[in-house]
Amino acid sequence: MAYRDLREWIQEVDKMGELRYAEGVDWNLELGAISDVSLHKFGSPAIIFRKIKGYEEGRVLVNPFGSSRRVGLVLGISPNESKIRMAEQWRNKVRDIRLVPPKVVSTGPIKENVFQGEKIDLFKLPVPFWHKLDGGRYLGTGCVVITRDPDDGWVNLGTYRGMVHDRSSMGLYMDPGRHGRIHRDKYFQRNKPFPVAMVFGCDLSIYIFSQISMAPFGVSEYDYAGWLRGEPIEVIIGDYTGLPIPASAEIAIEGDCIVGDTKEEGPFGEWTGYYGSGAREEPVIRVKTLMYRNDPIIHGSPPVRPPSNINYLRAIIKSASMWDALEKTGVPEIKGVWCHEVGGTWLFHVISIKQRFAGHAKQAALIASQCQEGVGLGRFTITVDDDIDPSDLEEVVWAMCTRCDPERSIDIIRRCLGSPLDPAFSKNDPAFKGLNSRAIIDACKPFEWIEDFPEMVGIDPKEKEEIKRKWERLFK
Image (tube, rainbow, N blue to C red):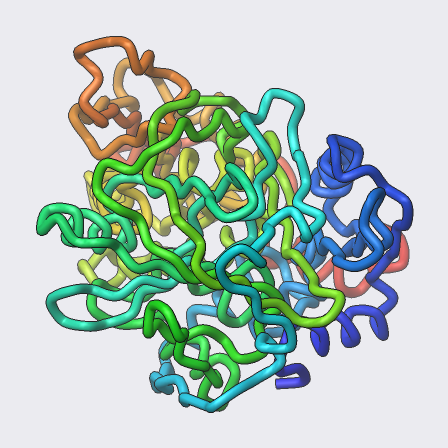
């Protein structure tokens, strides 16, 4: 791989001409507003904010995944492909996973500045106030939260939000069902302190596995990152928690959460595009150690209203995983899967199939809606024929409008896994139990008279791709 930490990755992106710098920006809302505009324009460059108002040192990186070239650089796949082809490349790549455990080293750049006790001050860092209705300044957006299972000892990496309360404490919100939350609950059930380390800028091969559900319960995301990097991730052992922390990370904290020690956390503008979870009491991390590199870089990943560039890389990975899950259960002739950015990759899933039997379309949609990649806060799962590009929202909606009869083609599945972040449910409603329903939509030609279905106007997908390649200069 061409880079070994976040700084080397930034150098590669700069060589590609896809990096911009901004100076003198205010951390209070202005930085967040610029990020919002950037994250809604696919193909826009990554941005590093430096000399942030009120801070001589400390930088913020946003929009690292906003182009196919930058996503290709992170995943080690060709960027010159359609969305579906990039997902297919990733599927092929992960079939050859050989997990590589991390390597413990004695020190690293993360220890260039170490603070403990009264010397800890999280506001030494240019922590942004991202959205005007947020409850505070959020350091934990593009972060990695490191925890250990108290039973088996395996280490989990997850991305959960973190609001700075004061100089030495942070809120930590973890959605129910996530591996880190399960670790927390195990400690709390035993009335023991929950040790936590958080990293706020690191090698993106580590970050991407912390924010997707790829590693199964009991397997560390460090091992996956080592596979993608092609060598072990070097880690130091935290003096306070004993947790492994990336040696080349930009910023890290260590601390613990104590049962009953809570503060109001939030609200925070979330990935759904709403303030769905409001403000409530959440556990507090009492920070015991703060470490950072000279002139450290915060990886900022503020959720904005979908679709956004934040979701592009996740869509590729998640679509590939759902595709594999469908094939592993025996669903035949899957031609493409896309977990749409417009639904934050969670709410709107489309599966393209070559219909082979009656009920094929329903089978694919039902399984997709309940597999690991589709079960959490899903909303719509749609099947389309193989002449429809599942990543093209306009084609999908056209298929729904012309091939789907609502009475015959739509089913509702009830009491599925939801989330407190769901904006469609009132949290004051006593009936809300963290559950939601799913719409299963068959937008395929009716199988029982598919041969008589009217012919489609235009060219088929394969011919379309050939025309695009041959006459590329005409479409730019």
